[in-house]
Image (cartoon, rainbow, N blue to C red; front, top):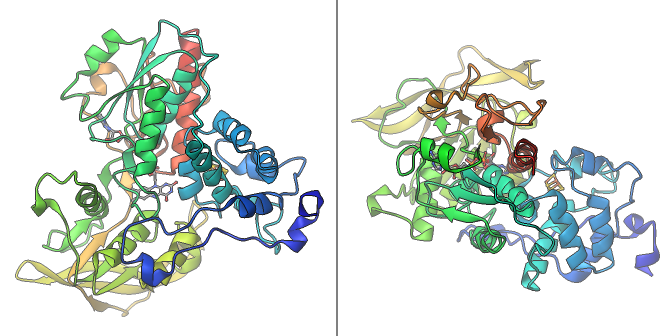
Length: 471
Ligand code: FAD
Ligand code: SF4
């Protein structure tokens, strides 16, 4: 009897949900993993050792009660598992899909040393998807409404998480976003093959049902003034993300055919979802030879989007080796299966072109040197190793820097030297900015990072707001 077997991990190996064949999945933009069925979810959950001091929970930025909901799922108890999982996470079905589990919960699972970690992310996704399909909704029956209301700027994971905690404590949250749909980078950044967009529209319905109000297509500073929000609300939460694209700083970046990663990905989302304002805005790489520069999640998304658009060939050039790549290993493997060719230890030094159009990218080889301040080994240039990779298009995916709004100074919202908003976690009111009525969290405070860290900060900032408002 498997359910009574404490050593299930010896009999049942780690098994992820079925992955759609690369040849099939690269023809479309749908998610590449099937869902667990009840038996798989239960058997995989039962592999958990129920460690007394679970490292997985500790390493998870929102400190999910992982062993507890795994136990509930091993017993087939979906609804209780969904309630429990929502006690610590505002978007569990999203994290289950896009967290780099190999670096977080699953990377620190006790079984991750030869037996194979418990498939925590896939079970987390299964719990919420299944509970929603069964008609479950967060239980708000015990919430008592207060007379407080808070304006949330940004409907990304940080803003949504803040709104979730506020709503569950009886505070009215009104969320403003300049985009036509909620999600921030979850909708207008992360491609559909990692996170299908109806996941976010379903969440919008759930949050709306919880009393959260959304004012979309509304940019604060333009369509609505910050002064009005300060006057009309008891507090304001900023979850506005980071949107300054990092440049390579080498010659030729202005040539036709060189694109920043995010405009490329957004144009594809807009094209696929029907948000496109002008067909000329769509950056279409069908039939083109493409070189993607970078080695993080954004670079992988550019690689795999280019493949799906029908690019003739996609090369990903990265200046370090595979071991020192910053992104999720799972996504690198997926990209490779879909036909992306990796060229490691290649540093771009110039985009070359003819008649104003890109024709190639000049790179030098590198070798790995001493670790830098982040512990990643530096890439050192090998003299005399220049070569040109011929290409029709270059996608620059070097990451993002903060993009503070010009009006922050008018409201006494101070910044660090690099443009991040000052909103310390260790503070009488966590994540309060230098304007006592204004709190902030997510990428704009910590620098561009992860969905789950933005959720963690949005939730903690909302707790800070509740304390400040004495709710
Ligand atoms: P955002 O998600 O950027 O949301 C900010 C919101 O604020 C946006 O909707 C914006 O429109 C709105 N806004 C800004 N200014 C205003 C204004 N003045 N008025 C109204 N609205 C405003 N993380 C992972 O964990 N896993 C991944 O696989 C992953 N893949 C990624 C792939 C790509 C291509 C990118 C770019 C990022 C990826 N990330 C991934 C990182 C992750 O998406 C971010 O860390 C996370 O979305 C940050 O959340 P946030 O709420 O701080 O900001
Ligand atoms: Fe793992 Fe992310 Fe879920 Fe935490 S939120 S348990 S890190 S998948």
